[in-house]
Each structure stands twice: as structure tokens, then as C-alpha cells.
Length: 297
Ligand SMILES: [Zn+2]
Image: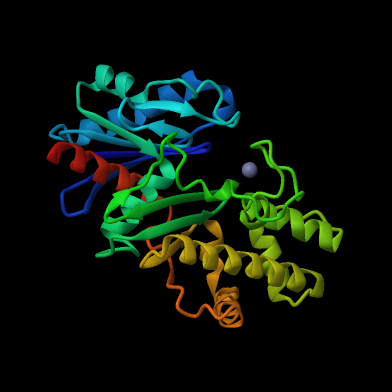
């Protein structure tokens, strides 16, 4: 199977066998601001490279940013980060272009599928996943099935309000989780607190390690908010595990212990939270799994 993960800055493609073994890969940098035709061309190149290497592939799975109607394969909502993407029927286009059955889903959903198949959620059927990256992605799985919701935005935990009247969000509301728990938010909060313009999450975390007291305070609040969100997810969904992915997980040794301390303070030590294991390949691996599931039906 071919699994493709379409993001704002790159397109990742994998050829994956039925046991989850990666047989080949292709990655293309993209500039989403150039619009739909540019992204489509890069997706075409990525799939073509993989199909040339693996002409026996039976189907294609695709994970993409935006909300996806998984029945029709159409992107029903996408932010301005992917101009022209909203309304585009990816399934129709890929099927007519490559003559292979194609399944499409939201990228957070495919990342969760990947982690459940080959990563941190192996053998579990009830999982919530959060990715702490440029934004905050989320997905829910109950009884082994993704819960996509009536309007295809189930699992959009990033836009649940955490701080009423808080920082404005690109969704039009204020105080969303994404504005406090994404890597982008961490850089903003640290820059405000230290009155210094940090350029990346790594830079903020390096300053945290050096013991900069203002940044220590920012990280304490960050971890408190994260613990609160995870506790609420645990109470509301009661998954077997919450899997955390995204860039901030690479430096988890700096803050994981204090997250566990927060759970104790909240009298919520039973929250099972695990780091994701597949890194930035989760989405493409899960997209391949999506294709396998489609072919089995
Ligand atoms: Zn929002």
C-alpha cells in the first residue's frame, strides 16, 4: 500500500506492507502558500516515485490537514494555511490520476491509526491522541474505530477553549488549547515572559534547561495546562491511553516528570499517557493502514 501524509511544509510518502514494514519512502518539501495546484503537483510526484518502485501497490491512503468527509474523500474545511484546499475532492483526483482505489482522512486521524497499528497504541482500542506541534492536533478512537463526528471535526481538541477570553485563535475564538499548548504558543508565551524574541521551541527549552526563571515559570504553567487537558480527556472519554505526539515530545525528558507530578496534585495518577513512537512517519503509516482497511471491507 501507498501511504501519503500531506502537511503544510512537506509531503511524506511511504510504501508499506501488510505487516507495517516500510518498503520505500519519498519526501517532498512544499510551500502550501503557493496554493492547491502546487500541492497537487507535489502529491503527484510523491505517489509517482513510490508507484515506480512498487508497481504492485493495490491502493492509496492519504492523510491531509483539514476536515475530510471520509465517505466522499472531499476536504470539507481547511484553514487559510492551505489555500484552495477546501472543497477539493482528493479521492476523485487521485483515483482518476492513478487508477487505484483511494481512501482519505484527516492527518491527525491517520497519525492515530499509525500509532495504534505500529506505535504507542499497539493492541489498544480506546485511544485519544494529541500532537503538540505547530498547532495542536487531536483524534479519538473508541472500540477500535476513529470517531470522526457528524461534521468531520471530532477530535479537534486544539480548538476546545481552555482560557475564556484568552489569546485570539485563527479559528475565530479566544483561548483555545492550541493557543497554550502548541509549540508556536510556547514560543510566544516564553517570548512575552522573557521580553526576548525566541525563534523556536528548542531555543525555549534550552533556556529552560539553563534555569532561566521566567522560562521555568512559563514551562510550569505549560505543564499545568497540559495536565489539566489530559485529565479532562481522561474523565470525558476514559481511553485506555492518551498518546502525545508532535515536536515537543522529542524533548519530553525535560518536562515529563513534572507532568506526572501534576497528575498527583490533581489526584489523577491513573491517567495513562504515553509518548508517540513513530515520529513524523505516523501519518503516512496510518494512511497506508487506512488503505488496507478499505480493501478489507
Ligand atoms: Zn481555535
